[in-house]
Figure 1: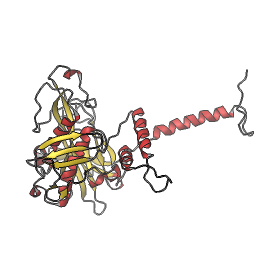
Figure 2: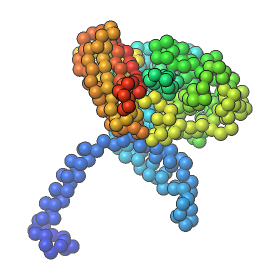
Figure 3: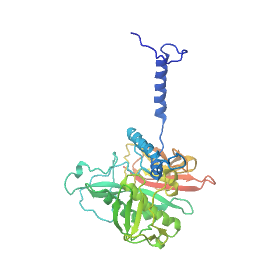
Figure 4: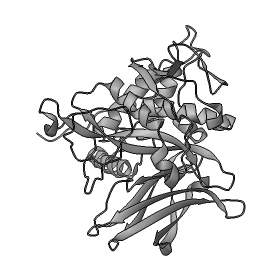
Length: 386
């Protein structure tokens, strides 16, 4: 029996043309799909969904509950596509070596170098932690207040991945506390990166995590002399907020801060009566430094047998970046790069340096001023090729 053409076709179609058009449409759809480069919008969607209330009976100017299923659909689509977006991609792209130490302290530790990481670190224990009392090395995302590299200077938040040895099965509250301890101890980065120490001498008390809120109890409200300006004080609070939210990897959960169990005024001026949170992704420039160098990581040692690819995030004018690679203070290579999107959005950039001889290098990524070409913002990262 011959294949029957659908009866609903327009009389102008020739026999078999419906099948041909279907094949062409499927081919075109597949081609266009491959060109799609999704932007990091999940954090903004989740933020809007979290802020939305119930739909009004009239469907008028009430808040939009429909954003919640949209956010869920976006999450499902991301998982199907093999991508999971957190607020600012607070998951490391490398795994530290597994450890055997059993002690958990409340003082910051020195990061353990990782020579050839290839897998994404997770909070799930590996086979190396199956023995009772053993630990695993975990990379904790930690935020610090630092200068962005302009002449003023201007301060914003930078993210570092700090290695800690934690016992297998450590709960999320302990992970948040460990990350906050690191955030309040910026000493080891201050000399090399100029990170401020607004929480110097601070002690992190009880930490609680629920689906709706993270609670952090501090020993003191902070020394105003350690945070000289209103903006630095604001960013000092935000570094705790971003660090706690990154540690739980569960979106923009509000953070409530207390001092010895009670509300207070941090640094003498910032009230803790209301919880704090990070801005949506479209306004992350309010808190985050314009340029980050994400890879190579601080403790990564790229092999000379493979090309070195510098990756990062940027919020810069017209998505335009300049870069320079130096070795021993002498310029080795330089060029320009483009972020995936321009300001005020935050985009990704990539710089392929090719294979490099063994040695110590520093990559500087800069936003040239649109006014006079001077440095509007800069981020650097030193690394060793072996």
